[in-house]
Image 1 (cartoon, rainbow, N blue to C red):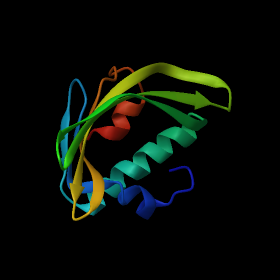
Image 2 (tube, helix red, strand yellow; image 1 turned 30 degrees about the horizontal axis):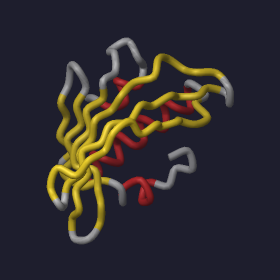
Image 3 (tube, rainbow, N blue to C red; image 1 turned 180 degrees about the horizontal axis):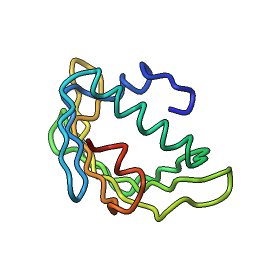
Image 4 (cartoon, rainbow, N blue to C red; image 1 turned 180 degrees about the vertical axis):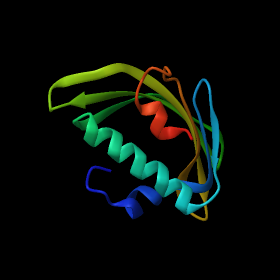
Length: 122
């Protein structure tokens, strides 16, 4: 994401893609809408000097032969060594579509006060 390579990011997602937070649901119906979120998150990370994100897998399991449910916790690191905000969990569904594993749904357990939420929602 930091390199701005949307196509590499895009390859991880199905379209449509459903994104949820505590307060919002957003269905990204087109590649252009997905790219808009990508750009907004990149801008958020640049403005807040987020140098990388550590994602720790907490659980993953097959719910069907073509679908995995997974939970990970994200920690955003600012300026290389400072934690930015509190860690937050994300629950996702990953589906095998035409031989490619892609995210179809993600639910972010993130507080509205966290600046990232504005990047994810309209």
